[in-house]
Image (tube, rainbow, N blue to C red; front, top):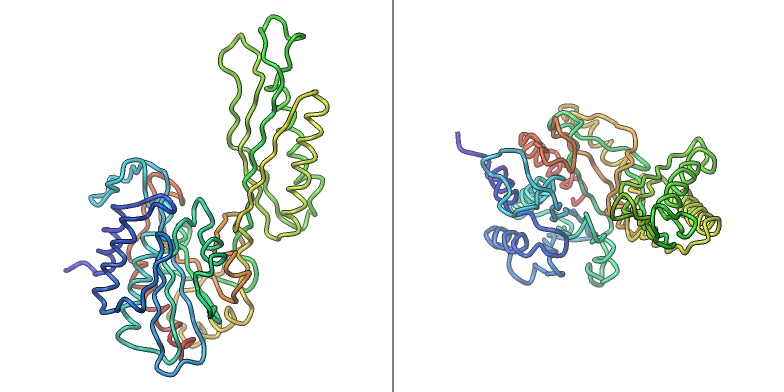
Amino acid sequence: MPLDPFIQIRRELHQIPEIGLKETATQAYLLNTIRKLGITEPQIKRWRTGILVKLPGTSPEKIVAWRTDIDGLPVEEETGAAFHSLHPGQMHACGHDFHMAIALGLLRYFTLHPPKDDLLFLFQPAEENEAGGMLFYQDHGFGEELPDEIYALHVNPELPAGVISTHIGTMCAGTCEVKIRFTGREGHAAYPHLANDMIVAASAFIQQVQTIVSRNVDPLKSAVVTFGSLHAGKTNNVISGTAELFGTIRTLDDQTNQLTQKRVQEIARGVAESFACEVEIDLKQQGYLPVTNDPATTQAFLTFLQAHPEIPFQDVPPTMTGEDFGYLLHQIPGTFFWLGVDSPYPLHSAHFAPKEAAIPQALRVFSQFLTTRAN
């Protein structure tokens, strides 16, 4: 049996993963595929390494947009797949190859079945590292007319293949990168009184910062403060004069995020004062705002499901993962969906192995749904 053409496209894209804003081979592949669909250059707009495609409606009254992310991750693939990554140290470990294949499939469907309203397809770079959605929007990438509504999906390894999930309200957390650098005085291990040990300072900070969630955040709200990287010292008998920490804040609403950021800064400055050292604090939220679904567009999808009971659907609680589609949803009403891919390994794993049967299922569901929205 011949392979589904969009599964084949997924496999070809899987072989050429690229880090955000460096997706040149990916952009070239997408442009070539889009042109094969008969879409002419005036309908295609490039933005950095991304692409915006417009399909004019037959009698447009609004603009409906579909966004897909296109970047990979700095992960060395260990799946053993015959179509494994050809780019060393890079992998589509977050399923963006699936997202692109589905978007191309939807694009093909609507070139054959033109809707009444205009459709936009955004192939967006740099979701993983530079908040490409925010950069695109702030650069006026949509032009003079913003979409009236916007949609996106993301694969979910914890759901059975082909199952769709969404709900009104928050789907994913807002995130903030945190970098802290403590600077004291290096010295010999035998003379601690002549040095200022930044490993001890960093340890005190790590301990105290854990009280933010337990003692500052409303127990009925959600927050995570994790420092996954700590670099200090060179050897066993030298007291380190510097310590650098790299972490993340994740919350389900902006107010809690701002509170958590404020407390991280206050604790860092307090530790610096108590240890008589210097501290540098860098907070970088960028465009990773909470992914909050619009009530009207999401209810439209839930109503659509009632008319199609054959579509497998499962509601899931909010997750603390981040997604820069949240920034676009703060500007344009729309809905974010999970697509089940039933992988035994999680997102961002070097072994991530999503089931490709989800691709044709997604094409069936979302071609029908977008038809209802654009007609």
